[in-house]
Length: 251
Ligand code: PEP
Image (cartoon, rainbow, N blue to C red; front, side, top):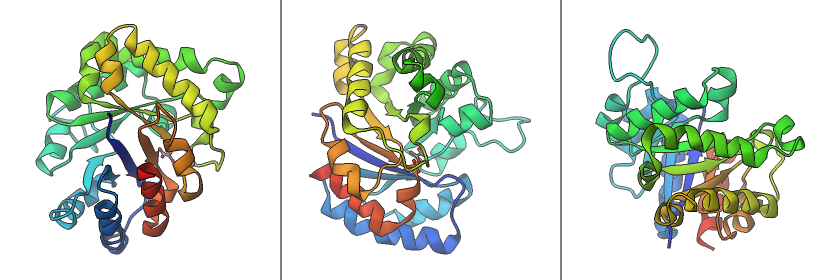
């Protein structure tokens, strides 16, 4: 039985005041839905504040990205070592905004996945197809290639200590959600692709869905057999709405 995980990705949004209000507003949701792990991924500069605010709560947290290097002349980056020192459990790797806007290839994402794991973080590997790829019927081939890059670099068993987030790019921040049936079909495909290589890994790994998840659709999405929770952008910025999303995972 896989534990449900609902993770908020705040992207480039937060102030000191909003972080305090948001974390304090999520404490009850994390307590009331004890079967669900609630995590947040703030912009890196707010991680120390989140570390302090979550100290006596069940809320876990992570970063939105980490560099492939652990130290040195890499201006503007944050390393897995630093994130670990500030108590991060997770780091996202390969979010579509990193792949598309920052030009990160699947090989770079695989390097980030490896360095995160080597330094004690649980990588949340984001995969998913663009609208063009979806319309061309290429979804399964795209996610397989994105997974293959990590398997080639780190081996199939590396996914024993990782989370996968399937996020169709056309559903991120657009208000268009994949139907529960479409999402389940791809999640099941990912799991069976993994099972061909290692059945135990496939059975164990949490596969989150991401793409315009909100309170109104979370229970139906998270109720699918192979959807183990969600990676949530916009709806994670409001404590009331995010609490509804979280409740959808414990239904
Ligand atoms: C995301 O940023 O990973 C995401 C899924 O965003 P949204 O929920 O806003 O679509």
